[in-house]
Length: 181
Image (cartoon, rainbow, N blue to C red; front, side, top):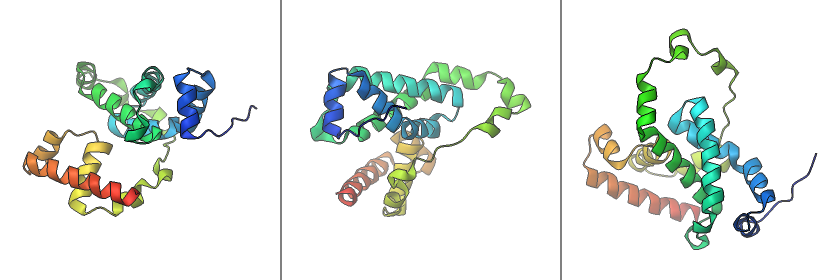
């Protein structure tokens, strides 16, 4: 078994930008579970989630030059890529068509679901950080970032004005920035 070195974010970014395959392997080995968990929360369907994870890594590989270290950490950027990929899929006509067809697993029950192991992505400590937010902020961040709702959908679901959703989201993100330092 080959032991991989630990890279700093800067080293990993440099290797990714030079299209070094070691960086891609390292990236997948260290971040696939967390990104898969994010995608799975938004999509829910195992087959599509796996495909979207692969698509996410391809986007990261192809678009690494767009990553700006002054705007945040590499992992945060990768989470945004995964989240946006999943949300785009969910909103796509393919996803809508898939949800309209009668899926045989839904009719007879999905036996494979018993064999699936769900990966907890809270090793990052997100639950503790989220608990620090006010309840009205927490619900908006949860719906937007973990469930894939748009601000307009949050407004309709919670029956509050769109401006209130935007204000609370902005305030919540500012509070999270303070918490995370």
